[in-house]
Every structure is written in structure tokens, then in C-alpha cells.
Image (cartoon, rainbow, N blue to C red; front, side, top):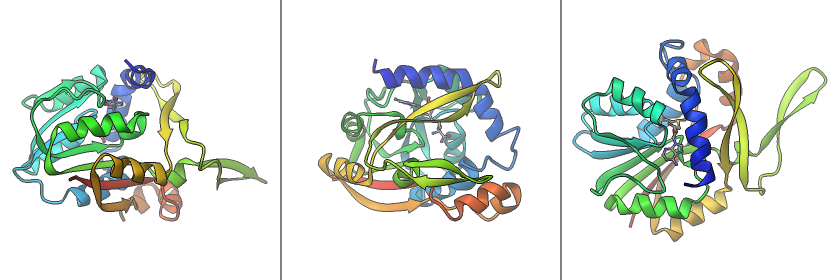
Length: 249
Ligand SMILES: C[S@@+](CC[C@H](N)C(=O)[O-])C[C@H]1O[C@@H](n2cnc3c(N)ncnc32)[C@H](O)[C@@H]1O
């Protein structure tokens, strides 16, 4: 097992319940970064899903699984964290959701779409990941993945007077970055991910025999303005997440 897989298991096992609660019970109208920022863009690139065979790569606690199944998709999924997966299974008892990694996808069959929402930045080796995604995709099938916006990932906060502002820094330095997270017992933890430039992402897509069909910079939906005014003010001006829609040739 790779180092980043061990780290993902540790971080997500220790925060699964808290993560699920803050996206559901604590914020019944949705959490800013997911339901109000990332999901609307990803769902729009997914388009019509009725009767489509979808593989939910890094299904987490099964929030997408539930929505897409309700929309008529034939969905299966997997996740590397047992604690996240247990919640997904509890909420979606009839779905085939398995424990496994994107480096070794635990399915042999082929799908029309592989969806990876906010997962791929936990994997360092995208050539290995693309090879696995390609193995489980039909020819002409779509890989739709959302991730950190490469420019936004390269920002750092600096203080000017009393004000904290973010500035672009180290865009070309690829590798591990950390962000704040919260564990089940309320302890602050550092969540890892991997920063890649646009150049690396685009070349990786091309080298692995996929073509870019669409791309979106996530923009918060209107109701976020009232629910999370501070975050809305910031992320309606600056990018944070993006979504790629690529097709296996
Ligand atoms: C931010 S959560 C997103 C969950 C879900 N896709 C969603 O959007 O609701 C990231 C998920 O990726 C999973 N993950 C991280 N590394 C993984 C890997 N190598 N293979 C499969 N899943 C992974 C984590 O366990 C976690 O459940």
C-alpha cells in the first residue's frame, strides 16, 4: 500500500462521522464547499444519468450515491476508508459499495461513467489511477472528476495589517499540501492532498488516451449567499474547486 493510501485511511477513518454530520445534520441545507459549491457543477457535467452504469470512485459516506440512485442511475461504488464506507452502506443498504483503492479498483465489470468527486487529489500517481479508470470504463465512457483548482491550491494566506489575504505562491511546485480538517472528537487534523499544475493534469489526460470534453470552475449557488455569506463573498470571486469531464478514446 502506498503512503498516501495509508494517510487517507487514517485521516478519513478518524473523521468519518464528523464529516458526514457536518454535511447533513449540522448543515441540513448542505455544506458550503460540497452541496453549495462543488456538487452543482459536478451534477451539471454528469447530465442525464437515468439507466447509466456509474462507478462512484471514493464514494465517501454515500451522499452522491443516494442522489444519483434516486435520479435513476445504476450505481456501484468503492472507498478506501472503512469508516466512510460503513456510513455509505448504512444509508444505501441495497447498493454494491466495496472497500478498495483507486490504484486497484475492486471491480472487473465496465461502466458508462466513473465519477470521482473530490477524491483524485488524494492520489499522487495519476498515470496508475487513469490506467485503472480506463480498465473499468467502456470505450467512449466518461471520467468525471472534481478536484482543487490548481491555481487556488497554490495560494497562501498573508497578513496585511489586521486583514488576512491569500496570494498566489509556488504554483509550479507540485506535491503534497495540507489543509485544516476536523476529526470525530473535534481535534484539528491536517488533511493531505497533492497539488498538480494545469499542464500536468492536461498532459496526464492526453497521455492516458482520454480527451477533454468539458471543464468547470465551481461557482457557489445563490442560496449560499444567505447561508454562508463570508464564504460566498470569497468564492464568488476566487476559484476553489474545478470539475473535469474527460472521455476514454
Ligand atoms: C472529500 S471525500 C469525498 C467523498 C464523496 N466522493 C463525496 O463527494 O461526497 C474524499 C473520499 O476519498 C476517499 N479516498 C481517498 N483516497 C482514496 C483512494 N486512494 N481510493 C479510493 N478512495 C479514496 C476518502 O476515503 C474519502 O471518503
